[in-house]
Image (cartoon, rainbow, N blue to C red; front, side, top):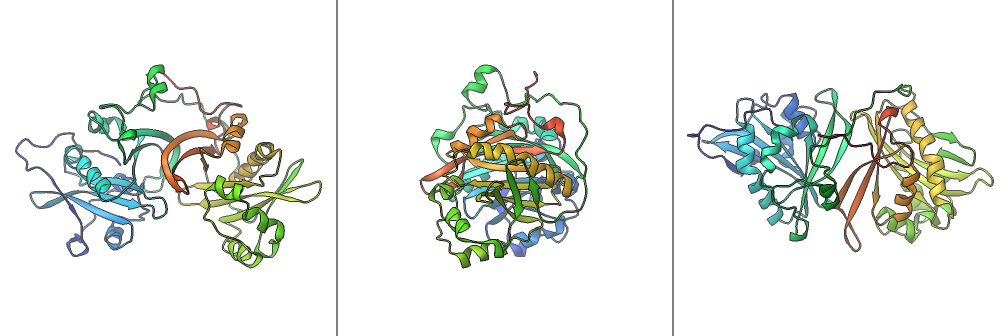
Amino acid sequence: MNDSIASTGPEDQALPKLARLQAPDAPADWSWVGPESLASLNTAVPLAEANQVPTLLTRPGVEVWGVYVAGRLQAMYICSDHAQHHVTRIAYASAPQAPGLWLLQHTFMQLTETLLSAGAQKLSVHLFAGAIRRIWPLFRLNKRFFLEGRLRQEWQPALQRNEDVFIVSAVDGEGMRPESGTLWLNSHARSSGQRFFSSWANSQTSALLPETNSRGSTLVDTAEYQLRTLAAKDVNETLVRLLNSPQLVGSMNLPRFAFSVPSARALLASFDRNFNQFIGIFKRTNSELIGFYTVLVNEPARQAHLALGIHSGEVAASRVMVDTITPLTDSYFERFPIQKITGNVLVTNRRMLLSLTHNYTFLLEAVLRQECLGDQGRLDVVVFSTFRDLALRPKLGRFAPVRGTE
């Protein structure tokens, strides 16, 4: 969400009206959606160009709401619902000559209440750091939204630059509402004076890891482990038992599914062994498979997403992650034109979270409240990221950089 418009509208201007945009009413001209607005809309749903907006009107899980003044479309919201976890992402864009913040002030909370009343369980907005102070007046009397975290160096294809992004969310239910007029992280942050606009100290950029376009399968050797991309032919009973482990399924919040050798082979066949890889972790002493990584590369976003599963019977599971995750991620930075790799960890996965206290590669960026749906209800998710730029990585044993003062 961004706003480059004056913060108030004319005193005599009619109040804006919010209406769900239907396919027959979609305007033909979308040239008013410039790069900044397109980047904002891309935080909810990927769009290569603005004239793709009409195709969203019939897409399941996506709603487009128009903001009208005197019958003219002045701005719009795109709301995209995650089908599995029912988290709705909201993005906003206004016409160049429209009073964008004034329109937000009169329609945003109305849209929020409409979505929550219709059954949305969580709403999230991604706010560009460059625009956050201009949008701040919208949250002066905030009674719904709370700050969950700050994502560093998110590549914006529409802008051809990196932007830090704040995640601001609302959850259905009285217990999750912040105090009126606040966007504090939590009571501890409030007492320590770490407020919404506190910024991390910017380290000088250090030497970057080399960047190539070699891509391809993964083969990484460490002193104790070998990581290599697996194909369908590599499936055996050991991997099937690992995939069916209740502890693994619970820690990764995977669907309950009884794998067999044929179904596991079908699973691995769905990975292309290039941009989407299933990577086995083997002990070098006896070639035993003890876990796996999955890595999905999104080159347009210059980012990758990583997940890790380790056999529950592995005593040194935390050590396995510490010893393998940095060589693996560095190999991706060397082989793919990406700048950032992110992993999400359930708060119930304590083994993984405790391991990350000793990590010197991944940085804590956000704690997403009630972000996904599990067997026992909604679960919190912790977001960790690592970067090509070594200066953005944490010091050993630190979760986050030192915060600067205002």
